Image 1 (tube, rainbow, N blue to C red):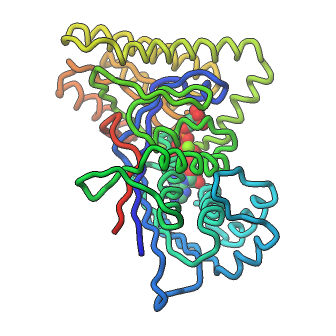
Image 2 (cartoon, rainbow, N blue to C red):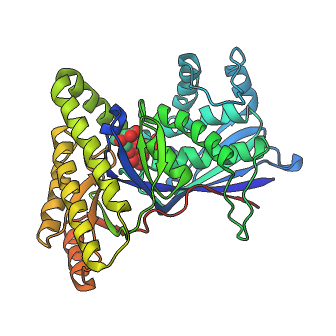
Length: 383
Ligand SMILES: Nc1ncnc2c1ncn2[C@@H]1O[C@H](COP(=O)(O)OP(=O)(O)O)[C@@H](O)[C@H]1O
Ligand SMILES: C[C@@](O)(CCOP(=O)(O)O)CC(=O)O
Ligand SMILES: [Mg+2]
């Protein structure tokens, strides 16, 4: 028996970091996915272990079911409702992951492997199975790979453990019903907590539900974009870690509470104004152009405030300088500190200019990604 799931990555148009402190933020799914294949072995092939294959990394981890059962025997790990990982559970998981001696160059994967063991033992218990993961997203670059990993994993585990219902559809890839999506989203948030420490929940929510969303204090509002949102994503390829960056901003907020409160409040207004520009009445090219100018100004203001939070980086500033030569506006997306930068591509931008910008950015060693914005969320396929 097997099931496949895929969950998209995301871009944050405005409000990263501030959203952790209660401000509004705007995010959209992108058409780059994490894929999970969850397979229960037939009795003849039962290897008696829980296996995690990280295909892109060339890594396989395996824990005999008996070892997991012994390690967790004092805890009631299985739970039908999403709950936070207790410190004892996390300690046990961490030592099971440490025993695997992940190579130093890939040690940043440990938090993802811990999140896997948490979701697995909480949703599916210790029964043997194989979980294979592949991702089209650059990992640790601000495009929400951690959230799409947790969403696709939670959905696959729930699909073969309990009954999930799907919306009718003609394609092989199906959408879960609203209540099942909510359940997956809550479990994915618990996985994100293990990877990020203190996530706002925006990444797992947009990965689960897709489209363009506004997110504030845990509440999702689906947005109706009435204009094309064309974005170029530039990956600076500078590695960074969301958990460390989120902690850094929180520490700055403790040192300068009033100043940082004002910064977070300003971002809240920026996100709300951006929402108005995106949802404004559909009209002709002239008014698209005007709305794009508003979005560009808001992106510029948001980037300035992200710099103020201490999460920009020389490589990000470099992308900003290159795109400014072509009168294009950019801002970092996700946690910053390197990672990815967004550039708005106005509707009237010629292909010729667009090709020049991409060539210029790539000559600096950056990688450009062209993506569709605001598409599907989590989907499932019963093979
Ligand atoms: N496909 C994957 N396989 C294993 N771990 C993953 C995968 N995708 C994400 N992760 C985990 O998420 C971490 C990256 O998350 P994060 O720092 O939040 O950056 P982002 O979410 O922007 O990609 C990785 O270090 C890893 O622990
Ligand atoms: C910085 C933050 O706003 C977004 C982090 O996104 P990413 O993990 O860098 O893709 C944190 C959060 O909202 O949980
Ligand atoms: Mg993340």
